Amino acid sequence: MNAPSDIFRKLMDFAYAGHCLITDDTLEPLIRHADQYEVLGVVQLCCQYILDHLSPENCLGMLRFARHYFCVELERRGRRFVRFNFGEVLKCGDGGKEFERLPVEDVIEILGDDDLNVRSEEAVFEAVQKWVEHDIAGRAHHLPDLLKVVRMGNLSAEYLTYSVLQWPPIDADNECKSLIGDVFKLMDSAPKDATLGHHPQLRPRVPHDILFAVGGWTAGSPTNFIETYDTRADRWLLSRDNDLVPRAYHGICTLDGLIYMIGGFDGNEHFNTVRCFDPATHLWKDCACMYYPRCYVSVAVHGGRIYAMGGYNGRIRMSSAERYDPQVNQWQQIQPMQRQRSDASAAALDDKIYIVGGFNGTEVMNSAEVYDTLTNQWSFIPHMISARSGVSLVAFKDTLYALGGFNGFTRLTSGEKYSPNFHHHCSSSNNNNSIGGGGLGVGGEWVQIAEMFSPRSNFATVILDEYIFVIGGFNAGSTTINYVECYDSEANEWFDAAPMNLNRSALSACVISGLQNAKDYSLLGRSVSELGQGASGCQAQQDTITAATTTPAP
Image (cartoon, rainbow, N blue to C red; front, side, top):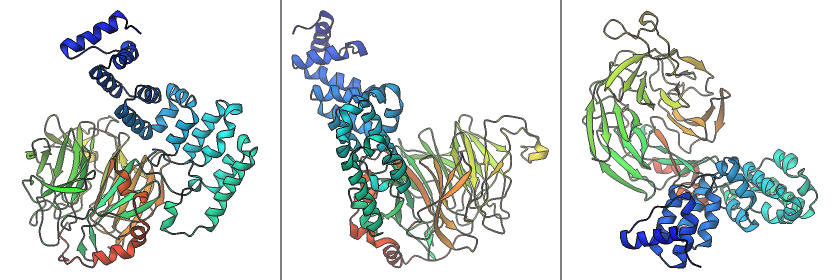
């Protein structure tokens, strides 16, 4: 088969110049003829072009393409893209049509993968329905094999009864009904213990997003414990990666797939140190120190840099702020805040960093400020409805949420939200946000949201599965708790989630997405003996920590 002149010219360009221009129109004939003439360099360029242009619309087609031309690395990375973006693949028109055209072997391989990124197993069954209904007459006989890769034990009994069993192709198939009947028996008879996660019909998927809860204060002393939360199993797991000094009242953030632990307190020392954890390698390393020790520090990430603001250095509450550039491993001081703040909380939204509440050494504060990263200036925004120290601030869907905290008298269940992009002028007399005698507000007002079930301060907050999770903290009686709740901002409702193994406050938490070794941090990555440790094993290890028990002033 002779190559067309334009394709032959591109092959010659590569032979003489080491490069050639690839477009969507020339991709397939170019890789076909490069493969024919064994011009491996052009094949590699075409594979890279495909990887650079992968999308939910074309990824399944590209997989067939990669397999046909024996592009092993392209196929491996393409499969990973499909796993991580499976929901989007099915939703988009082209991707959904490509899925319907797959052979049954590919459907079984994709749906049976532990790493398939789906928020619920219902989505997997609906994918089976979509594929079968494209050609019921020709595909219904594959249903028994397809049902074996649906984790039916993770579907509710109601869904199995009314959505699965009553689907006509299954209702007409005795083998399918027998398979589902076996699942019902298993769900009724299986022991309620850690071994459930390893049964083929009950095992959860490996989550795409891993929640890490690090350090904190428990049983009168700081801890070095790390727990990870498997959202697919609704289960907290003790981490093996506890190679750090016990500390509490620190900051945590993620940047480029790494976890940074900033400042804090170990019962004796107020830290200016920074440690970095790589979850892909399970290794900790030291980073450049901050200019100042900071416990009760507020931390945010913006533009590839980490911001550390305020806090307590063992003597005073600070207004100073600094930022870290991991590319050069250096901290740089920035403009100080308008107010001294320890035990406040910060979050980044658009090109700005917001900080709310805290304690200034005299009073618990309800004031809030915003830092413009482009001008290096702080400005006040409207005060919160409640004064809050030990508060958590989180940015979610263009809105800031200030949750919980201590108002000087009691721990709070209340929360409030603020939308900075809701612009109107706010008078300084109404909001007490004047700067140097006058000023304009930069957003709307704070608005109350539904209250949490448990009062809490000095807790951790993350965004996971489109919910706001609140984790641990002090409750109304100044007791550390392990309770976890999640907030649905659309419904304005709170829901319970599985509690941590360890009661603790003054912890920090973050989420890492798309880890290639996410299984290491999930239920499926643990042996039955490890899962059996639970809270008792956690507490036994905590009893060995001999750090001092002095709690720092806020």
